[in-house]
Amino acid sequence: MVRHIGQVSTDAFTVLAEPTRRRILDQLRDAERSVGELVDGLGVSQPAVSKHLRVLREAGFVTCRTAARQRIYRLDPGPLRAVDGWLDPYRRLWTRHLDALERHLDSQEQ
Image 1 (spheres, rainbow, N blue to C red):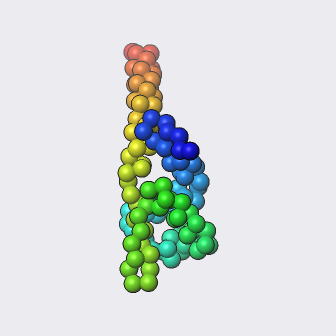
Image 2 (spheres, rainbow, N blue to C red; image 1 turned 60 degrees about the vertical axis):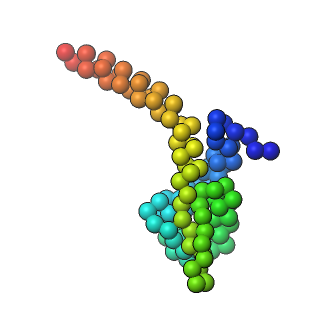
Image 3 (cartoon, rainbow, N blue to C red; image 1 turned 30 degrees about the horizontal axis):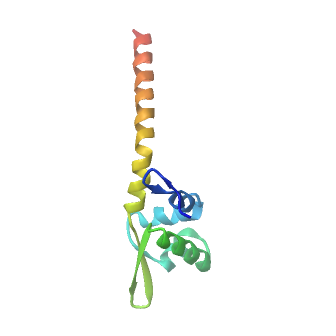
């Protein structure tokens, strides 16, 4: 059973909770990469990287295409936008608090 927090599946948070998966997303942020390039960049075994890529693909965080004999992965920003949208009210809350603190500190200097 998939539960949701707002419009975000709790599975998205489970996927992002794994540090190796976040590192894979970091690697894919700037460019698409083959499995071999990810293995080299992460220093993790090929089977482990493939396992994490499968989880990321099933959750919609990455897409895959085949080029010759390689599987090339690309970041799909959709699920990250959903997570960011859920986080946005909390970001605004902290921004208001920090702005109020800044005003208070500025008034103390005068």
